[in-house]
Image (spheres, one colour):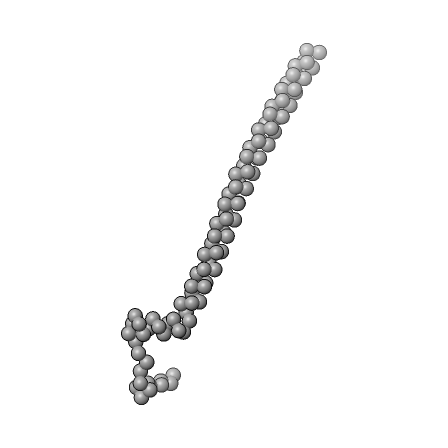
Length: 93
């Protein structure tokens, strides 16, 4: 009879520690879930900022690659001129 009572106390103690462990695991899991959600939201905001910046860079690239822009830079900054047609030579491959 004494062994049965001791066994019950051990069993109750083990169940008690199992419940405490489960509660601690639940608290940790919820905390980690919140941390990861905050990080996910931060990354979404960064993605949105990078999308806006990418769109701006695409607009800038398209304006810089237009023929008129290249022509203007060539004539103003580089002092390039169109050669006389008589000086142009066509080379065949």
